[in-house]
Image 1 (cartoon, rainbow over the protein chains, first blue to last red):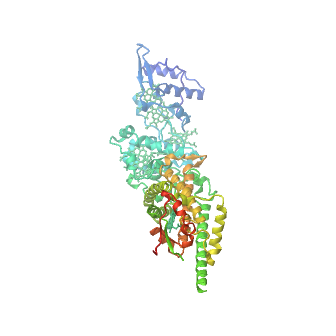
Image 2: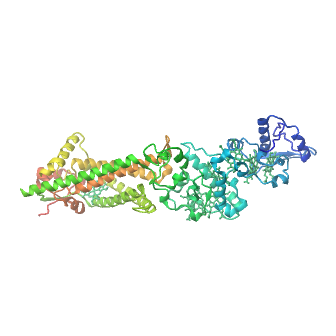
Image 3: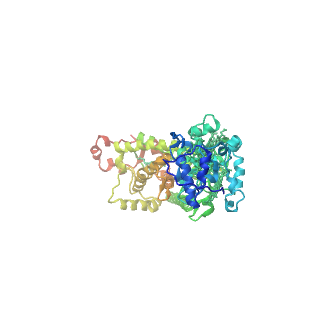
Length: 330
Length: 235
Ligand code: HEM
């Protein structure tokens, strides 16, 4: 982990940023030893600018003062950051310590950011996530092949908000919404898409209008369930395929051996078993997919009723036939 | 032997009934294809089944509303009225007829006449289907067509699951009704007598069962809207 720096508590509005690297260095020397406190201090130091709509700078020498706009893309929500998977971190665990200077020096900006694998690669503690396999899969995805270095894990895993999704039952709807918002933040947002490839974004609603009840599908299945190739050892598929390879055949989901058991419902499928007598019973409380969910008992009952009705009719018809002949014979 | 024809199924009912029957068969076939969808043995390809089911369902609704309005503003409503007090007794008599009397060649306890188109079992089942099962299947069907109107989470259960369960159960009940209905068509004066009635509109009855035979003057007591057409094929 990166070396920790400390800061003196500084009131936001009265915060004076030295215009020279020299004067900032002197701040560092006043660092305190209390670690969690310190970490909070560093975060609030960065967020005194990056957590606000505006920030102020002034020159200690000339006394000149300016209030400037902090652009949306550079703003960070403290609450979301704290709740995120890496929310315990301080900013300089991932960013160069040179960012403590302002204006941020080029050396800080030029430094390549860590990738997931830099920290998680070959780490026993995260073996269950199979980071290496995810990376292999990602490298085969359209995003990696089409966009190359312009695209990385961070484009989908917002470094300041990414949260491991809640897999507890009852959270299915939220999990899908969060997951899809990752894709929609880019594919549904002209600004972020355009800035990446500089050409016109297609209309997702239009390109998915072949899907009946398109809004329901988008709120009940994930984009990746149709767009990514699954891999047995990883929970969330990462190999996003070109659009022409996406699932378009309804019965791939709407049948008892639905592909969704291996993707969207994989976690539930692995942790719960067929207890309720439902085919694919683990998710039937939270979702219903015609053709895929069948209640075993209802199936049996309806077949039994059907057969009884047919037998009853057959007996009645035969008796009618026999008795009529008897009567006619008389 | 039947010796009189009464006009029981006016054109509007026959029109409704024919369209309804065709739509129901389409709905059942496409519904079964979706419910038991199997990529290897598709009865009807899934996406086609969805389209077929949606279109038939919408048409069915339109024709059902037409039926309802006709029942309310036309003379046919009276045939659907159930005599609440003695109804249990009537049902019992009719069940006894279907399970015993019919084989012995007994006369039906509730023969068709101008006042009574349906026997008690028909009355009960037509009412249950027309005013319970079909409305429920239509309401749940429209809800599934516009799923954003359904609460997605109903005390931890998918609202769509519950709506769908009701829809499919009613569909099943209607299918069972259809099978029994088809069988009972053959239980007339002759095996094809009832089928002929719903095609031509005329039902063959025995003179002494008809209203005219028992109370000759009652025909005149029916008001203008309640006019029934009687016609004797032999004259
Ligand atoms: C699920 C679909 C069906 C429903 C809901 C249904 C319903 C009904 C109803 C409500 C009546 C009484 C009409 C009246 O007010 O006069 C009736 C009569 C009749 N239906 Fe159907 N029907 C269906 C399908 C069929 C089919 C497929 C056939 C045969 C091809 C058929 C043959 C007849 C006949 C022959 C009658 C006249 C006999 C009688 O009054 O019982 N029906 N049906």
